[in-house]
Length: 334
Image (cartoon, rainbow, N blue to C red):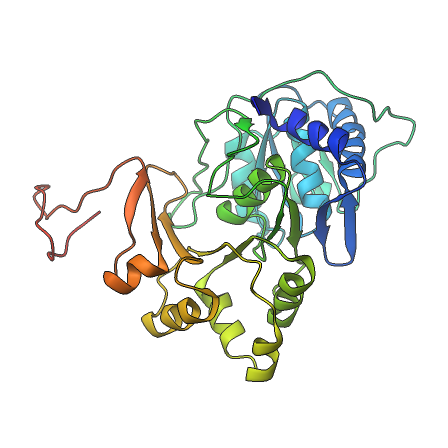
């Protein structure tokens, strides 16, 4: 497949497999056709509210199909989604919106961000708006997450990549035309990015209103995904389930179960390696700014315990206090 805009990628899958499931969150599932048509109409509603190409649109919604629909509608206008927590305290939200100069804030009451255009949780566009194909637009920066680790005033990270991708190889070692279980909060960079690129690749994305370990295992058993995203806290909560619940889950469809976001205790990582397979459990290490990304399989980790693998995007090195390169085995700054 050639490189397509995020908008055209969704339309492509809607044309090829209109009635297959595209997006699930909790009890709600949207087909590819529903997802494409609903976001066409939503994009037109956002355009009426003033959203234009390369504007930033803050999305402050809880995990839901509505979250992804809002982001897709923004991309269909050539604009940039700027995800934040739905529970963000008022002053923090105001500061981020001010910094982003957000044209629209989705999921917030008008009183929380005075002098900004807002739409509430559960917003539905006027049904008289067309849901037909929109002009093909590509945003200059495909996402604008906030930093998860800075202090002081908030920092927004503008991706340097435009909103267009290869649908056969969208990134993160994702499959194509399969299913992906992604039980993360969507305002976090990794779940947001992986969910989006999984959709670009034609995958049925399964997300959850909140993390419940049993529901994640049920989803893997039911939907037979090739790809599972987890973080160490999720891995620990799943591992602490009663043996009979964990052992009754069918994990055999997984080709990749990738963990990231925090250090994983060695005992837990090894337990998962033996559970899902040495070549299935992988680790990704990076920052929101994506200066570099490393990747390591479970098989490699067993041979190099403690390693986070080799960079496959960008480059990394370890330096001392004076900035000089350190040899293997020495502790320094990345």
